[in-house]
Image 1 (tube, rainbow, N blue to C red):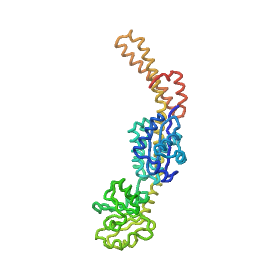
Image 2 (image 1 turned 60 degrees about the vertical axis):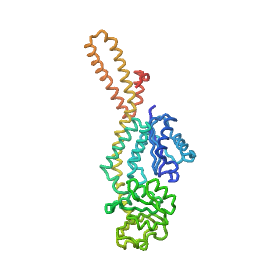
Image 3 (image 1 turned 90 degrees about the vertical axis):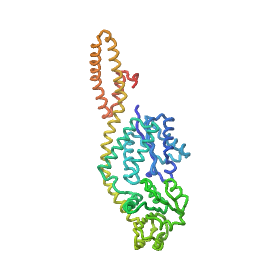
Length: 418
């Protein structure tokens, strides 16, 4: 019986944010989980991926321990395992699990198709796996094949072109006028879902000099502390608006928060305003003032939709690239199954050769012994060539286990160690 690759997943497709955030794992928790899996189940290869949209565990084992792993997660997070079990999906078919990890890492399974963050998140998960000695030959080969495939997708398709989410489109607009400003002060009003996404995107791009303000101070303070931003009291929001070069507003209000009157004390410098609120939190007529540039949600969404459409059009090409990579990887994966048998067969034949050499070498001169060594070694190479080719061919036909059993019986390979 040989190991198979399996996946366990909970994502935006089958669980709400409220459920996902309870299960989400930080780096330390990911490493602790891998350690527990190794100690409890003797699994040698595991990858744990946890982002805001998904928590997934990939493992290579001949046993199906998916439910037990979920119970381990529940134990680590102090949750009721029976309550969270229904939210998880299992991928127990080896090829389906491999294909699924490809699609996750490339961005086909992301909430925003072609997500720019997911490749780096997978790289971090792989690094943690390697740090814990939980990445063996299978995972090493699989992840490096995925990274190579990702580069090919970037080079050959438009799958990652443009900003396909509101937050990325917002930052893309912001970046269009950043060169015109020297160390601009950026104010983000509102730390709801959109405001938080914008803040995280700014943090991912290493932008500084950012202040967050929100009606609920605790939420703004927590986000600012996590991302290394400044926080301001919402009571001072109008002062902050006047002080900022760029204002991104995603606060829910019945009447516009920013009006002509708000900006009447504005200096002569240009101020950029981005309104992501529904209803609008910035009055459209502020653009009548000198030095005010306003972008509304429709403009941001139009940019995001155009980018998303380009990405969707590239999906068939992306799947074709993945399919080619899978063929090559699966060939290697299948051959990995017979590799121990090949090594044992070589060991068995080499043992026979050495025993026979030992019987006659005393009767030979040094020169004759060296010549006999070369001849018999060459013969063994030729003898083993055909069984090796047949084993590899049997892999592609899905008949490897039958041939392995035959060779085990013929040469008593169970006694051989690799």
